[in-house]
Picture (cartoon, rainbow, N blue to C red):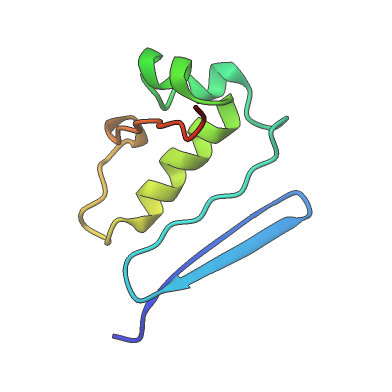
Length: 88
């Protein structure tokens, strides 16, 4: 096995990540991910704790992409995101 790759793009933006372990990358424009859309993929607690709707969406998508095929849940809502803060 040569490594792991994740690719993402959105409206003029693009990127990729290559690693020797599973990796996930998601890029979105903040205006594209409306609160009602993000609320469909996260719990009320995740939605309230996330910096903004696009951050929650991207976190869920990146985690989903990092999971090896066959271990991904059927729905992204089943992935749980726990936010931590590095601010004092």
